[in-house]
Image (cartoon, rainbow, N blue to C red; front, side):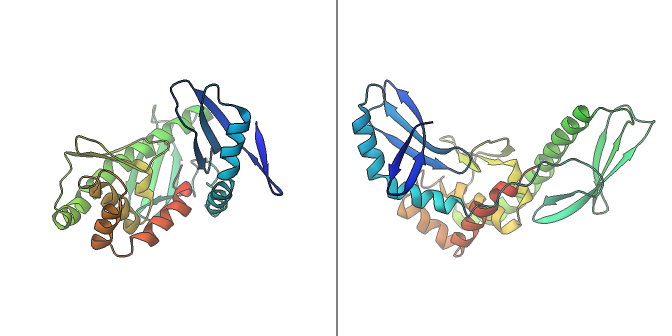
Length: 242
């Protein structure tokens, strides 16, 4: 991996060259590190000059990202494990039964209850639970989101054409040009005030498609403490996972 020196700090980065690129763009992400996209044929000296000028920003960004909570170890889906929904944690109870040929999952009396056949393989069990929990979060989460839409749409004077929870690897939310809003299903593990922040953020894009000062002022008018909620999601977002 290429790197450059800034004072006593060595900054590693991944680089991608694109023939249609006209300038150099730099991003710093928690999982991906420093990524540089540059035009094909750029001179090393020119590239290093640009990176050196941006080094202070890169280091500041990286230090901020280091405050982020590390994701927990992957779930084993065994009895006693806890799973978050709307900020509260609920235990899983797993039963083995000769009477079932396929595993099942339900939520009952404040617990997730699963029944699995005794001879299911570890791979099959993990795969089932990952998909079953995702389906549960989407099914119940979309009902909850509709309740929150009924609160915020009248306040904001906007209505999305569609609202769905879906798999999104790198984003918490998306607002399309057609007015549809898609949220990462994992947000349903967060407390309701954080879910509300993400929802309000995407609803605001129906009026302001960018992150202009008007966009943030609009959010602040609806949610005066949005910055604290935004910071909670930045720091704790990686923990919202199976």
